[in-house]
Amino acid sequence: MTIDEVVADMATKAAAIDPLGKTLLFHFDEERMLIDGTGEANVVSNVSGQDVDADCTIRMSIDTFLKLQNKQIKPFMAVASGKIKVRGDMSIAAKLKKLT
Image 1 (cartoon, helix red, strand yellow):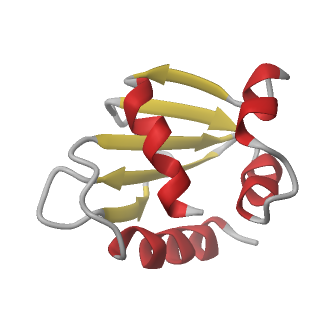
Image 2: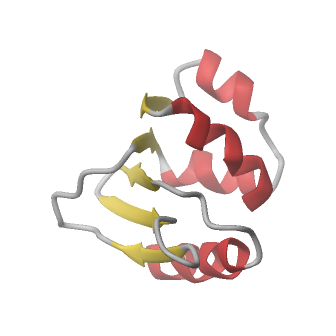
């Protein structure tokens, strides 16, 4: 799955929930995806190659992200094993369950 496919899939899911109220950056190795939930709707975009600040940054491989989306691994176990690193406002990361 390419970053553009991931962004498109996440945009569909994010549009179906209330705005997050903050910004969330996914950092996948060389690729990056931003969910901006500060407006009337969540806006998801590919920000690869850009230096972006966010209220919460989640670092993981794209493989780990896809496994989470397919429910092949549990978020808590991925964090505990170091496959996911979260920096910033953890309350935003807690809202991600709505996006799976």
